Image 1 (tube, rainbow, N blue to C red):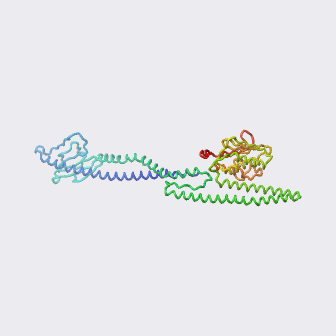
Image 2 (cartoon, rainbow, N blue to C red):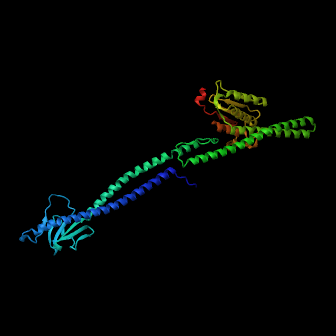
Image 3 (cartoon, helix red, strand yellow):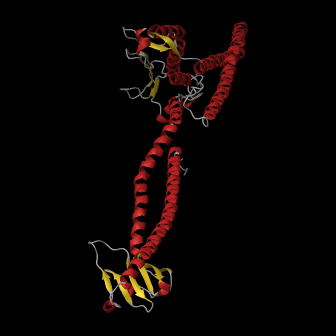
Length: 453
């Protein structure tokens, strides 16, 4: 099972989007680490400054007490209700509490161990002293306060990222899609081309510089294919054309030999040779028609009526097969088309010739051209099996090898139909019957401008 190719647009959008998200996430993470360090420095500085501001005031208050108040613990009353992040204790050299903030819990404060910072799982402390350790202060800050600040900064950094990620992906998809628009237009041009259209691809001015060489390479490949096909068609046409004169001369010589000899065996052999040479002549003509159908332009600038062409082909074949019961029906109004008249004539001749050669001797050949431009040629014969019908338009295919045709007539019709933009169908049995064979060709749609002209 072959793996389905992934979309270049999707791969680019996903890759660029993931890269942007990863870079943005890494940058946010690094920014958060830096902000965390800076925040710790700010809070530590605030702890230290609080201790250094409060300790002189506490010393002034403590040493200014009356003797009867000396050694008593004093609480600093709050000015107003507020959430207190910093709490502190002032102690003497023996560790006795002399002064504390109103919300301080002495149980959480460690013993004084000198100036500097200390930390537990729940608190961050700063201690300082004056008068050579006679008064000490320890200020405490809950670590939860810092954690809350870090969480708020993290949310401020990450929440916008969650909102920006979808917008970034949409912007990337839009930019990638817009950048790949010339490639999509190139793909559409290639999809709209017919199997026989080998003309160069036009250069889109908006095509990226990286993909322009692809168009050049495709045009180079198309040019080489065109030369190859033209060489093949030219060889077939030239070979068929060069064979006509010697074949005609050989047929004339055989006919003269047949007229001059009285030997029945020689006459029979000459007739066989004549029949083979005529088949070879027919084959060369069909090869020329096939080369014409494959190599030339099958649509012209000016439309014309198709009825005279069909009448001319029918009358010519009627002269060749005077005993063939041919019935022709054309509309009274003109059937206009811009298909090349010679190509339409070749198509009509091959359809009628196929019906004459492969139909029953007594059966009527019915040729009908509708006002809508559908040409049908029907003949009487046993119904053709569907699997045989499917391959009759291949080159050198005949219904079980029947008849003396070249096996190229329906292949030529199919080629003209495909390259002209018409529709070609084979039906057996014929519509409304239990037997018979019908070939149908519908003329390509006519441009309104050509119809008016």
